[in-house]
Length: 100
Image (tube, rainbow, N blue to C red; front, top):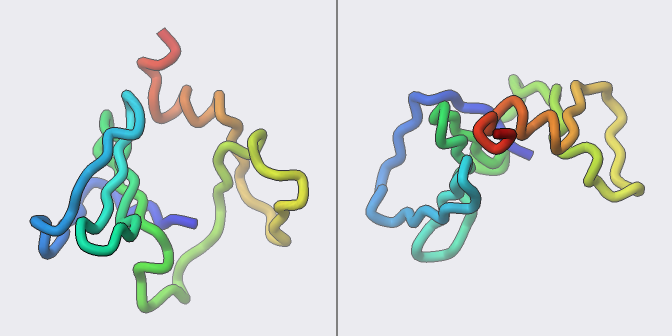
């Protein structure tokens, strides 16, 4: 579960963050000391997704999107209705250069 945080994201203690280039279109940030996942960033649009567990206050978050829905385990199901995107739809929207 992650929170879309846009492009205006700042991190304190950046010297403690390492970035892994996870694909041509995205990268992931981790704490160098403990290995905790800190963010997922879409390179082309500089959009940051941060794990919901990093936030102390979560009451205002709305769960409204599931991605890679065609790759989820059959036993994985949420009660509320959300927008759903398949792997192909995610790549088309966030990594259009992958389709060329």
